[in-house]
Length: 456
Image (cartoon, rainbow, N blue to C red; front, side, top):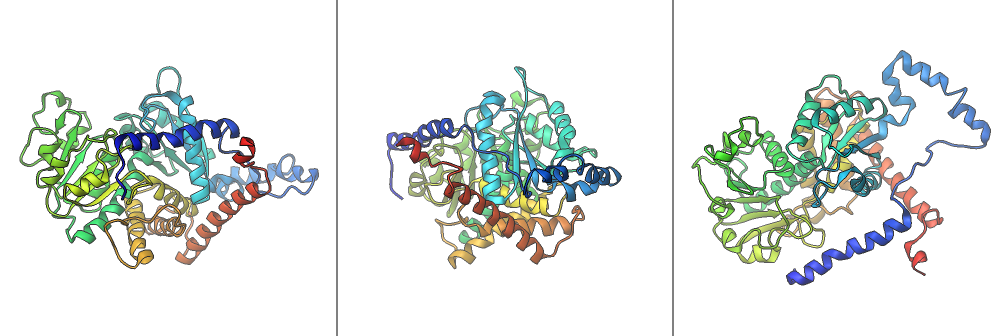
């Protein structure tokens, strides 16, 4: 791994943004609506619209479940965001969030074959949790699932928990900043622990940052059987401990973490928390130098360090390795071991939609995580410190995740459609390959013009 200076890395990190301004203006967005049915001539509109369309509408009126057979509900989701926590930009509003949600739609379609529609909501005053929950409830007739995105904490926790507990919401709802990040991080930890030979029941984990990402990771690790009683959580003011005077509100979500973690009731900064720790999971602010080399040097032998801030991780990977870490992961694609939720959400939703599941459970996420982790050894033949996850260009990952997710939903009795493992595999493979072929054909035929043509 080539060392870059802070100035070189900052300069490199700005290049995608500069290109994005030019290309977003040129294409005026990244998605559009195309038909999935034949239109041989204008007479076909009597089938697809009036008067013929009244027949399937009447059938759905008699049996609502037929909407999955006669419409695209089976393959469509809404990406819902109020723009209050967008990437590293913070509360920039729903309009400014739209390019991000369009990008998410593009990833869903290309990597998972899923039709995803961005719905950025809100006004000058942001929506509260109940309003977002009610919005999801109102739009669910049109969609087979909902992806919640870039909603500020603690509102994002209240929204997801409220939706999961609402019996009137009968479609799967997933918060990618929590569940997606958590699923990929779990997969990365599975392989990291295999490499260093440690058990999930014995490791001490430090969570630096107590936002949506780390809170979601904590919840999924707990569901998978990690022993988190030795864990320590650190926010912007230091270690969480029971008598912190600024956390007296019992309704604060951090109380859930304070009640069982930090058994020694340590006080201080992240450096204090990291002494003797086996794992650091940092989802905080961009670095470098947010995490110090001397802190890592005091971790346990064979330490695992995930510094996930973007565009610059909390510590450069080479510095973490020099300080004694054995395995280092970041959120960047140009460093080894990118821990990014894009490795997960297309496959999980593909499998969820293919069985028309009613929800997405922790068990479905965990099944996807183990599938993702197990693929590395299959691809490489062995596990190594610099490759703990597949990369995004390995299409088989999304197909296998879809199969694992769908099978788990069927096993849990929350699938409306029951398919065999072979049927799930062939369905996911066909939909993903068709989607990518459509993209390539549109580019080849010039319906999506090359940006280079514009530059000429």
